[in-house]
Image 1 (cartoon, rainbow, N blue to C red):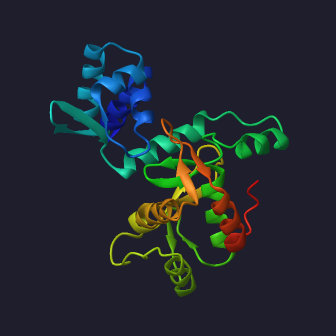
Image 2 (image 1 turned 60 degrees about the horizontal axis):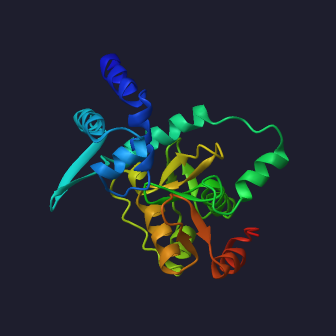
Image 3 (image 1 turned 120 degrees about the vertical axis):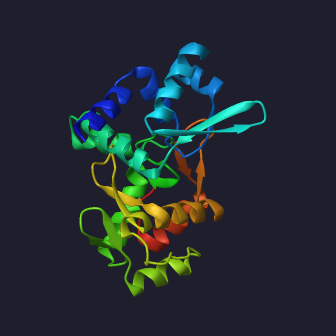
Length: 231
Protein backbone atom coordinates (compact mmCIF):
# COMPACT_ATOMS: atom_id res chain seq x y z
CA UNK A 1 0.00 0.00 0.00
CA UNK A 2 2.78 2.43 0.93
CA UNK A 3 4.65 1.70 -2.31
CA UNK A 4 1.48 2.19 -4.38
CA UNK A 5 0.85 5.54 -2.71
CA UNK A 6 4.42 6.58 -3.49
CA UNK A 7 3.95 5.67 -7.16
CA UNK A 8 0.72 7.66 -7.49
CA UNK A 9 2.27 10.64 -5.67
CA UNK A 10 5.23 10.65 -8.08
CA UNK A 11 2.85 10.59 -11.05
CA UNK A 12 0.92 13.57 -9.72
CA UNK A 13 4.05 15.46 -8.71
CA UNK A 14 5.19 16.40 -12.22
CA UNK A 15 3.72 19.72 -13.50
CA UNK A 16 3.23 18.37 -17.01
CA UNK A 17 1.37 15.28 -15.85
CA UNK A 18 -0.66 17.38 -13.42
CA UNK A 19 -1.71 19.68 -16.28
CA UNK A 20 -2.77 16.67 -18.35
CA UNK A 21 -4.87 15.23 -15.53
CA UNK A 22 -6.55 18.56 -14.77
CA UNK A 23 -7.47 19.03 -18.44
CA UNK A 24 -9.32 15.69 -18.38
CA UNK A 25 -11.40 16.45 -15.29
CA UNK A 26 -14.48 17.11 -17.42
CA UNK A 27 -14.63 13.43 -18.33
CA UNK A 28 -13.88 14.13 -22.01
CA UNK A 29 -11.27 12.22 -24.02
CA UNK A 30 -8.53 14.28 -25.67
CA UNK A 31 -5.87 13.35 -28.25
CA UNK A 32 -2.19 13.17 -27.35
CA UNK A 33 -1.30 16.20 -29.46
CA UNK A 34 -3.78 18.43 -27.68
CA UNK A 35 -2.61 17.19 -24.29
CA UNK A 36 1.00 17.97 -25.26
CA UNK A 37 -0.02 21.56 -26.04
CA UNK A 38 -1.94 21.84 -22.75
CA UNK A 39 1.06 20.57 -20.78
CA UNK A 40 3.37 22.83 -22.82
CA UNK A 41 5.75 19.97 -23.58
CA UNK A 42 7.08 18.33 -26.74
CA UNK A 43 4.99 15.49 -28.24
CA UNK A 44 7.68 12.96 -27.31
CA UNK A 45 7.69 14.17 -23.69
CA UNK A 46 3.89 14.05 -23.58
CA UNK A 47 3.97 10.51 -24.94
CA UNK A 48 6.19 9.47 -22.04
CA UNK A 49 3.91 11.19 -19.51
CA UNK A 50 0.81 9.55 -20.98
CA UNK A 51 2.40 6.11 -20.98
CA UNK A 52 3.29 6.46 -17.29
CA UNK A 53 -0.21 7.67 -16.39
CA UNK A 54 -1.82 4.75 -18.22
CA UNK A 55 0.58 2.29 -16.61
CA UNK A 56 -0.17 3.83 -13.21
CA UNK A 57 -3.90 3.32 -13.71
CA UNK A 58 -4.82 7.02 -13.77
CA UNK A 59 -5.63 7.20 -17.49
CA UNK A 60 -7.06 4.88 -20.10
CA UNK A 61 -6.57 5.21 -23.84
CA UNK A 62 -8.37 4.20 -27.01
CA UNK A 63 -7.70 4.40 -30.74
CA UNK A 64 -9.99 6.33 -33.05
CA UNK A 65 -8.78 6.46 -36.61
CA UNK A 66 -5.15 7.53 -36.65
CA UNK A 67 -5.31 9.13 -33.23
CA UNK A 68 -5.11 7.84 -29.69
CA UNK A 69 -7.40 9.49 -27.15
CA UNK A 70 -6.93 9.63 -23.39
CA UNK A 71 -9.39 10.04 -20.51
CA UNK A 72 -9.35 9.59 -16.75
CA UNK A 73 -9.67 5.92 -15.92
CA UNK A 74 -12.51 6.37 -13.41
CA UNK A 75 -14.57 8.80 -11.34
CA UNK A 76 -12.43 7.79 -8.36
CA UNK A 77 -9.38 9.33 -10.02
CA UNK A 78 -11.31 12.57 -10.50
CA UNK A 79 -12.39 12.49 -6.86
CA UNK A 80 -8.79 12.06 -5.72
CA UNK A 81 -7.63 15.02 -7.82
CA UNK A 82 -10.51 17.16 -6.52
CA UNK A 83 -9.57 16.23 -2.95
CA UNK A 84 -5.93 17.19 -3.53
CA UNK A 85 -7.04 20.53 -4.95
CA UNK A 86 -8.76 21.22 -1.61
CA UNK A 87 -5.30 21.11 -0.01
CA UNK A 88 -3.77 23.45 -2.57
CA UNK A 89 -6.54 26.09 -2.66
CA UNK A 90 -5.53 29.30 -0.92
CA UNK A 91 -7.92 30.56 1.76
CA UNK A 92 -9.64 33.84 0.88
CA UNK A 93 -8.61 36.96 2.74
CA UNK A 94 -12.20 38.00 3.37
CA UNK A 95 -15.75 36.75 2.94
CA UNK A 96 -16.48 39.47 0.39
CA UNK A 97 -13.52 38.43 -1.75
CA UNK A 98 -14.66 34.81 -1.58
CA UNK A 99 -18.22 35.70 -2.60
CA UNK A 100 -16.96 37.83 -5.47
CA UNK A 101 -14.90 34.95 -6.80
CA UNK A 102 -17.75 32.46 -6.41
CA UNK A 103 -20.21 34.70 -8.22
CA UNK A 104 -17.87 35.60 -11.11
CA UNK A 105 -19.78 34.24 -14.09
CA UNK A 106 -17.64 32.02 -16.25
CA UNK A 107 -15.14 31.13 -13.53
CA UNK A 108 -14.37 27.59 -12.42
CA UNK A 109 -15.18 28.65 -8.85
CA UNK A 110 -18.70 29.68 -9.89
CA UNK A 111 -19.71 26.55 -11.79
CA UNK A 112 -17.79 23.80 -13.54
CA UNK A 113 -18.00 20.17 -14.52
CA UNK A 114 -16.20 17.63 -12.37
CA UNK A 115 -16.12 14.37 -14.33
CA UNK A 116 -19.60 15.01 -15.82
CA UNK A 117 -21.31 16.28 -12.65
CA UNK A 118 -21.78 19.85 -11.47
CA UNK A 119 -19.28 21.45 -9.08
CA UNK A 120 -18.31 24.89 -7.82
CA UNK A 121 -20.54 27.41 -6.03
CA UNK A 122 -23.56 26.35 -8.06
CA UNK A 123 -23.12 22.61 -7.52
CA UNK A 124 -22.53 23.03 -3.79
CA UNK A 125 -25.53 25.31 -3.28
CA UNK A 126 -27.91 23.09 -5.26
CA UNK A 127 -26.80 20.18 -3.07
CA UNK A 128 -27.11 22.29 0.09
CA UNK A 129 -30.69 23.28 -0.73
CA UNK A 130 -31.62 19.68 -1.47
CA UNK A 131 -30.19 18.67 1.92
CA UNK A 132 -32.01 21.48 3.75
CA UNK A 133 -35.31 20.36 2.20
CA UNK A 134 -34.68 16.73 3.14
CA UNK A 135 -34.49 15.66 -0.51
CA UNK A 136 -30.94 14.39 -0.01
CA UNK A 137 -29.74 12.92 3.29
CA UNK A 138 -26.08 12.37 4.16
CA UNK A 139 -25.47 8.66 4.68
CA UNK A 140 -22.03 8.35 6.19
CA UNK A 141 -19.06 10.36 5.01
CA UNK A 142 -19.17 9.48 1.33
CA UNK A 143 -22.74 8.92 0.22
CA UNK A 144 -26.23 10.43 0.11
CA UNK A 145 -29.49 8.59 0.56
CA UNK A 146 -32.50 9.74 -1.45
CA UNK A 147 -35.81 9.46 0.45
CA UNK A 148 -39.13 9.07 -1.31
CA UNK A 149 -39.68 12.86 -1.37
CA UNK A 150 -36.26 13.26 -3.02
CA UNK A 151 -37.04 10.64 -5.64
CA UNK A 152 -40.28 12.47 -6.44
CA UNK A 153 -38.40 15.78 -6.77
CA UNK A 154 -35.75 14.40 -9.11
CA UNK A 155 -38.28 12.53 -11.21
CA UNK A 156 -40.49 15.64 -11.51
CA UNK A 157 -37.45 17.30 -13.07
CA UNK A 158 -37.04 14.42 -15.51
CA UNK A 159 -34.12 12.81 -13.68
CA UNK A 160 -34.46 9.05 -13.27
CA UNK A 161 -33.20 8.04 -9.84
CA UNK A 162 -31.01 4.95 -10.28
CA UNK A 163 -31.59 1.67 -8.51
CA UNK A 164 -30.10 1.58 -5.01
CA UNK A 165 -29.09 -2.07 -5.20
CA UNK A 166 -25.48 -1.16 -6.01
CA UNK A 167 -22.90 0.82 -4.04
CA UNK A 168 -24.43 4.00 -2.50
CA UNK A 169 -21.15 5.84 -3.08
CA UNK A 170 -21.38 5.25 -6.83
CA UNK A 171 -25.06 6.14 -7.02
CA UNK A 172 -25.12 9.38 -4.99
CA UNK A 173 -21.67 10.36 -3.77
CA UNK A 174 -20.63 13.24 -1.52
CA UNK A 175 -17.74 14.87 -3.40
CA UNK A 176 -15.69 17.47 -1.53
CA UNK A 177 -15.53 20.62 -3.65
CA UNK A 178 -12.04 22.14 -3.84
CA UNK A 179 -13.18 25.77 -4.22
CA UNK A 180 -16.05 25.64 -1.72
CA UNK A 181 -14.62 23.03 0.68
CA UNK A 182 -18.11 21.63 1.06
CA UNK A 183 -19.80 18.70 -0.65
CA UNK A 184 -21.57 18.60 -3.98
CA UNK A 185 -23.56 15.73 -5.47
CA UNK A 186 -21.56 13.27 -7.58
CA UNK A 187 -22.06 9.67 -8.64
CA UNK A 188 -24.65 8.39 -11.11
CA UNK A 189 -27.34 10.71 -9.77
CA UNK A 190 -25.07 13.77 -9.93
CA UNK A 191 -24.20 13.00 -13.55
CA UNK A 192 -27.89 12.50 -14.42
CA UNK A 193 -28.83 15.81 -12.78
CA UNK A 194 -26.21 17.80 -14.70
CA UNK A 195 -27.19 16.10 -17.95
CA UNK A 196 -30.83 17.04 -17.36
CA UNK A 197 -30.02 20.67 -16.50
CA UNK A 198 -28.07 20.83 -19.75
CA UNK A 199 -30.94 19.25 -21.73
CA UNK A 200 -33.34 21.82 -20.27
CA UNK A 201 -30.93 24.60 -21.35
CA UNK A 202 -30.67 25.87 -17.80
CA UNK A 203 -26.88 25.53 -17.86
CA UNK A 204 -24.40 25.49 -20.73
CA UNK A 205 -20.72 24.50 -20.80
CA UNK A 206 -18.35 27.27 -21.87
CA UNK A 207 -16.36 26.08 -24.93
CA UNK A 208 -12.74 25.27 -24.26
CA UNK A 209 -13.20 25.19 -20.49
CA UNK A 210 -14.70 23.15 -17.67
CA UNK A 211 -16.59 26.28 -16.63
CA UNK A 212 -20.39 26.31 -16.91
CA UNK A 213 -22.74 29.28 -17.25
CA UNK A 214 -26.34 29.55 -16.10
CA UNK A 215 -28.81 30.71 -18.76
CA UNK A 216 -31.54 33.29 -18.18
CA UNK A 217 -34.12 30.50 -18.09
CA UNK A 218 -31.90 28.53 -15.70
CA UNK A 219 -31.65 31.46 -13.28
CA UNK A 220 -35.43 31.84 -13.25
CA UNK A 221 -36.18 28.14 -12.81
CA UNK A 222 -33.50 27.50 -10.17
CA UNK A 223 -34.92 30.40 -8.16
CA UNK A 224 -38.42 28.97 -8.45
CA UNK A 225 -37.33 25.45 -7.49
CA UNK A 226 -34.62 26.06 -4.88
CA UNK A 227 -34.56 29.82 -4.20
CA UNK A 228 -30.96 30.02 -5.43
CA UNK A 229 -29.90 33.70 -5.65
CA UNK A 230 -28.20 33.61 -9.05
CA UNK A 231 -27.50 37.11 -10.32
